[in-house]
Length: 174
Image (cartoon, rainbow, N blue to C red; front, side):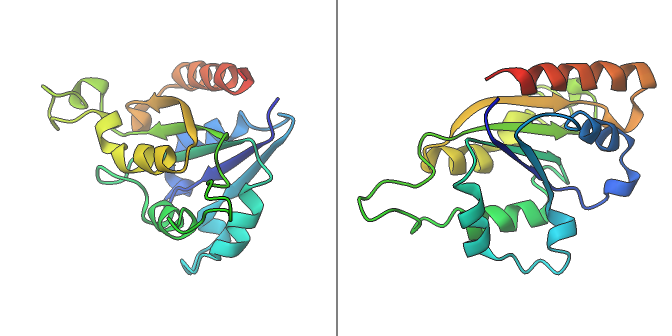
């Protein structure tokens, strides 16, 4: 399994039964390091050089977060702004992150039907992730997939079991 850095960002984690369960899926997986950005940076003072030094050691980055008011959690957005600096290029002109891949694991409180062009919000979850997707593309990080958990505030135990099984399958794919 690829050496993987999981960047978890949830400002209201203690209130999210779905994400509490999903984090359990990472337990026991080889070559995975979980980092909770809200635990690491409660003051929002990100250390970009430390973060850049850390992520070069990984082959894959998993961005795990809920959609907050139709976008990324504020600390994750700040992390991207400060760590994925456009000037972060090697002397040869190549981006140091070239060749890495990424997964996006995200949850939303609403139903899937609401997140469609014809739905209540008039936008898909993929639309709402455009900034992150472009940031990955600019840094030559290949986005391998987006896994979306809809209706995250109202999942039954059976639904949570299913979502954990799906996430485990995704994590085992190279």
